[in-house]
Length: 204
Image (cartoon, rainbow, N blue to C red; front, side, top):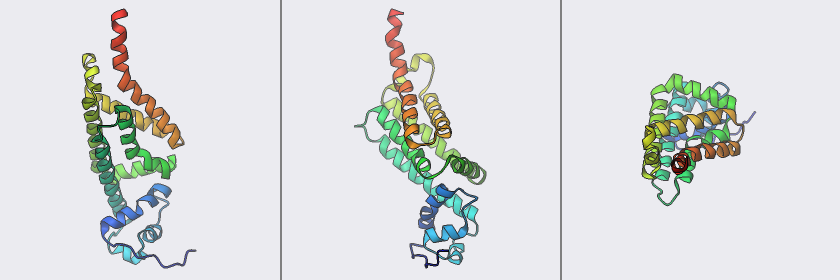
């Protein structure tokens, strides 16, 4: 048993939420105790209860912190016009899902997603909607959406397809490296597929 006194940190609720995020990612929701969370925040258990009455409340705060940080980072990448579209999309997805791939097992990821939807469904929906809109904007600026125009597929539909593909890949791989390899292929299908199809049409 660790008998060391917790190291004092900022006691602002936002700072506490940031400090405990990795604990949830590493151990999942059910296996994480308030003692674990208090230790990560540098507080006693009693001190933690002054800010968050339940583990559920603290999880919601940690989730809100993750959503805000993720979208802010993804927007910064979307604004980097010196990146080619494939690299830009790949880096944006790394911001969305990379941390959970690094720190949590597939079992914990699925559990955390389930708990997040139960406790913070609207926050999760807002993250997904904001992320898909961000992807669609990248596809429009890069001219990818225009190359699909005659198929009737919109930028938003392409973005939704990429988002769903990334989630499917995440649920079936066991390493970050495998995730990125398969995700890059999915991105290339979207960014190169229409142009290659158009190039073949005259001779077909």
